[in-house]
Image 1 (cartoon, chains in turn green, blue, cyan, red):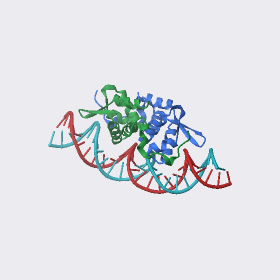
Image 2 (cartoon, chains in turn cyan, orange, yellow, green):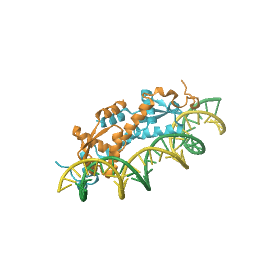
Image 3 (cartoon, rainbow over the protein chains, first blue to last red):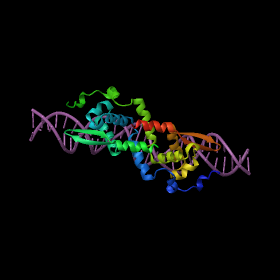
Image 4 (cartoon, protein in one colour):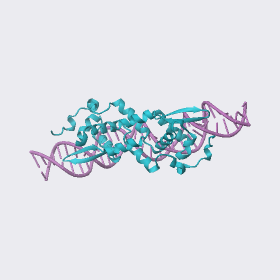
Amino acid sequence: MSRQRIADRAPCCATVGSASFDMPDAVELATGFGALADPVRLNLLSMITASGATGTCVCDLIGPSGRSQPTVSHHLKILREAGLVTTEKRGRWAWYSVVPARLAALKRALG
Amino acid sequence: MSRQRIADRAPCCATVGSASFDMPDAVELATGFGALADPVRLNLLSMITASGATGTCVCDLIGPSGRSQPTVSHHLKILREAGLVTTEKRGRWAWYSVVPARLAALKRALG
DNA sequence: CGGCCAAATCGACAGATGTCAATATGTTGG
DNA sequence: CCAACATATTGACATCTGTCGATTTGGCCG
């Protein structure tokens, strides 16, 4: 079969059904992967993961991250909004822990 | 044990060893996830994946993507440079196929 | 209460990213 | 060789992102 001319093709999302996920899914997934698309956030996530169910205090993340406190807070917000971590206030400190289900979902999307 | 004061902590990368991967790895991984951090690229990748070992002609990706030809070319370049796809010229067309090993590596990094 | 501390938010700014029109590069068929 | 075609590259532009200093918010303890 010969190739179709580009101009003859359907516009925009008309044939998006051929993809293995639809647009809302793609945006959702992209947000998740976007949260992983920064070395600082990967390090934060890995430290939080390493602390297991106990979680990690933000104050233990700042030094190792090599970034200022507002910057770390900013990155944690992105991880939070992507659903990759949750936070809990314990006394004067904020403790973060991972959401394994969310990580698993992204993993699953990778095939 | 009580929390340390933030000011008392080691600066920058001094304690980065506590993370589960080091900095070069983190940058490499971040690049990979960054390539997945866009809905258009996720759709492209999913269409390419769906075409299996045969691969997909770029001209079959443009319409469904809902983006202009240069934009698709741009996104394919990002996927290529992240090592997620490879390209091969067949006659007048360029055929793209996925690099499963690269996807697997990202998957593995997710725990 | 009042001062200290942890964390979040704000404001600003440089640099990266997504997008398209225009153009360039390379290939094929007549 | 020429015209049509598929893809890549360039240039321009608006928006998004990462970063930090300054400020705000809210809990703790003396």
